[in-house]
Image (cartoon, one colour):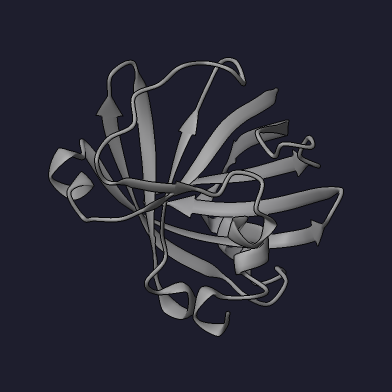
Amino acid sequence: MIEIERKFLVISDAYQKQAFTKKRIVQGFLNTHPERTIRVRIKENHAFLTVKGKSNASGTSRFEWERGIDVKEAEMLLDLCEKGILEKIRYEIQVGDHTYEVDEFCGENQGLVVAEIELNDENEVFKKPDWLGREVTGEVKYYNSQLSKQPYTKW
């Protein structure tokens, strides 16, 4: 239940041709407290409720609990969420032994493209594709919970 991930900006759209999936995501936050976030997400015709804890000092790992829920229930929960529903297109790309998730944000976060990779260990070695830019792991302004409150286009 501990999630270990690294986050990077994306510097080209080359990942699009390498993707094996492309899905639309809508998500909102019932709670964006610095110690914990509670997220409602609809990904195509699946929905999830996720609780995340506070990140460690480096921003690479934190507690995460997620469960599937009914899409209709998720739609009702989105109506209860804090202001700032996020929409994005997620691409999944296999690079070596890992899968990168690349999110192209829409709406007030248009223009922001971020890649995440989940790891088994904080020091795990992984391949970095050419389209990967600067690492932003641990930079709070790139957390989805913060983008919902302080969108990229308003930085």
